[in-house]
Amino acid sequence: MSNATPSTAIYELGSDFYDEVLPAQFPQAILRYRNQAAAQEVDLGELTAPAWAEHFCHFKALPDNLKMPVALRYHGHQFQSYNPDLGDGRGFLFAQFQTPHRLLDLGTKGSGRTPWSRSGDGRLTLKGAFREILATELLESYGVPTSRTFSVFETGESLERHDEPSPTRAAVLVRLNHSHVRFGTFQRLAFLKQPDNIRKLIRYCVCHFYPELANLPDAEQAARFLQAVSQKTAALAAAWMMAGFVHGVLNTDNMNITGESFDYGPYRFLPTYDPQFTAAYFDRSGLYCFGRQPYSVLWNLHQLGAALASAYPDLPVAELLEDFSADFSFEVHQRLLKRLNLRNPLQDPAGIQTLNADLVANLFNYMIAEKVSFEQTFFDLHSGGIESRLQRSPLKDFYKQNSFAKLKSTLESFEIADARHAQHPYFQQSKACTVIIDELESLWQPIAENDDWAAFERKLAEIRSFRGVYNYP
Ligand code: AMP
Ligand code: MG
Image 1 (cartoon, protein in one colour):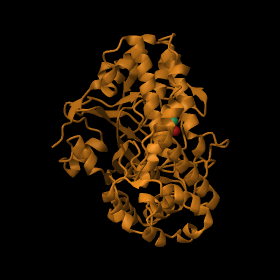
Image 2 (cartoon, rainbow, N blue to C red):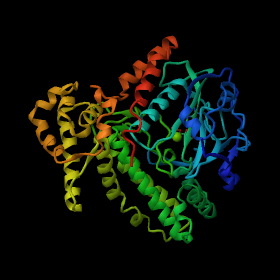
Image 3 (cartoon, helix red, strand yellow):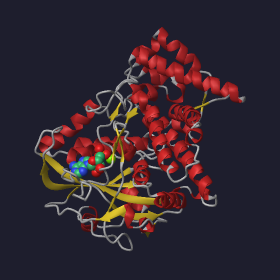
Image 4 (cartoon, rainbow, N blue to C red):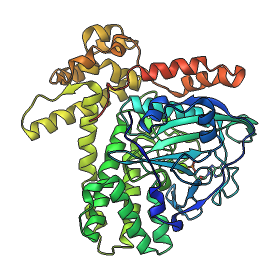
């Protein structure tokens, strides 16, 4: 039983915020992915296969929902340069659902051209969709706040891309997200000097995503809203760091106000810990490399703050964002303990902090010195590094070396947090589940060559097999 009801909340904002658009007409609708668990959460689990295609490939409106798709307007900093020509160029908001807690959006990628397409074709490659499915499924299993891929259809079109062997197959993807309000949605309003619309958008965000701020006076609400977004964003950045995830393109149009990761382009999961690891081949300076991600999102928060300040000139942006770094460290500690299934047994706050910080430092020093697989190390050290598990790891020889001794003794200062998680079948295996680039390419190859999806389906089952063990909080 679901508690989701159709919603048209976006209409509260009015037509300054979006453009009604028509979806592309696709020659074919070949279902490649249907997220049944997500569908049930928004009461769409019962849709028949033809109805699913009608709605999520041909975009026939859902009952009591948006009458027409709307392409959302936004700007943003791309690689720290302001771009006033963005907006949904190959996607739109298709439907909304009200759940007991929050509003959910169904948005698309690859659904056709819009007024914001510029010279683009409005399309998504099948490989892009395949990559986004893997990212969202794995991040969800690692407990990272993420959009979920809802549906993918192959559309029968072929596309030209300079970064894929072309012509290449096309797809249309639907994602389920906690809002598509981007930092860049606010930036556009500041750029256009529309303070009333900034206030309106804050009210929309507060009403649907931060209701605990609803009764505050305007200026204070804006301040608390910025702080709340900062806190969520710090938690998101910490979650990425503890999942070895490199988003790749942390532009302000790719960050939303609910602290949920979305829009997966050239992302990577780290093979080994390397702060300078850069995901996007076009990120030549390494601006969005793994280790810089917290700084990048903080820079983005300052842009959001500047946009809010254009409507509230007294907003003390720098002061309001001062807690980011403490929030980030706190979240790193909590996330790490969750990922290792550990509990800090100390009582005094200073002692807790020191021991947690030692764990972070010793773990990352060890990983950088030994260049060991990122995810395998997290997997092996789950529940503190149980000896029998270390013995069957592909990395077992590393655990006999002196370099591991310091980390081992720090791990011994912690307790197992949840004995049931230590017993989970996933942790009885010897190998961690990850999707580093070589494996991703080898999963793609049979699809590209023989339209054989079997290895991909097996990988999804593996990724889902440990869902829940890393859920946080
Ligand atoms: P992204 O890098 O996917 O976050 O996209 C950045 C901007 O480019 C957004 O405004 C997108 O809508 C737009 N965009 C990206 N790819 C295409 C495309 N193939 N056709 C039209 N617009 C696109
Ligand atoms: Mg984007």
